[in-house]
Image (cartoon, rainbow, N blue to C red; front, side, top):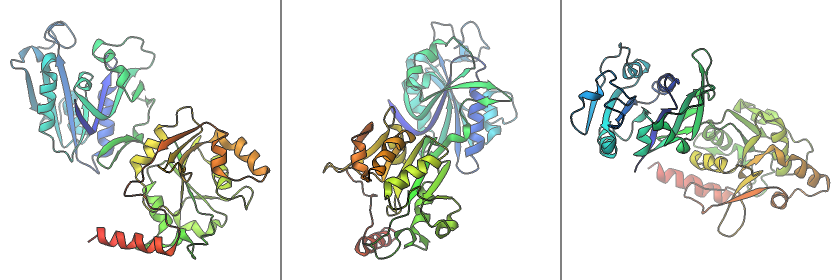
Length: 379
């Protein structure tokens, strides 16, 4: 089965479910920044007649002579779904009509016509049987109880089942959450990013958060990499120091309790139940790694990377607000050790063999080595 992380696939549970409207809305939002190719896949099942909806239909699919046919939509003014995608801003729009038994072959030929650096927004249920996209949505009318056969077969594979609330109200999932990241589709997390910047930086001998990295403070570099979050908080007890970031700075509720207090204080002030926590001394953060950590939460209170040595990395982890009572009780007793808290809450450890991007800068030697590495990569 083909894998195309640069594809958003949108299926529908029934007719008039708002599938094309959602595809067009995503294209409108992305096309000013990235080239988007619109795709429609129509799978013809001979057992239903030569119309995917059954019966005689309009005759277009009945005219399919070979195993499949790919045509490019050039009319941006017409009423067809493919024309609507052109009007929404798609650079090209392709329509694949394919017999069910030739689906794999037809989809492979379709994908071969689209360069890898293009984003793809595709309408289809059946295409999910031939391709693994970056995201797969199924749209349904609010309150609908029936599911058409082509959708029923792939419904368990959906990343999100979205209710269409009507043309004036949109969808249960805000299209603004759909984003492109490193050439693949992803959903903007419903979580807050937190940068802990209240440490003393004793081993570094200077405030790590403000160290210069190619002309900008290190904390600003980290904030940019986390800008896909809907909210970012900075944990620090001197708010004016970080006013240049234009993000809320949260002081500790009880000063002197260390990073655990920063985590609890930000969880209490965040707009979301979940916070991704990092320090101000990790200058490179892979957004896809962050999304994977968040995706692991489920019923856990904490998801934390665990190094091969067995040591956990608590400042590159996701925390739920549900840890606050346990963490607060520990700190009242004078215990601010984050790893000891992990034993008292629902903690999920994720194996973490440090990838090339991972750096933790604690000393001037660490900092200098990081800068040298950056200069070498930049040529």
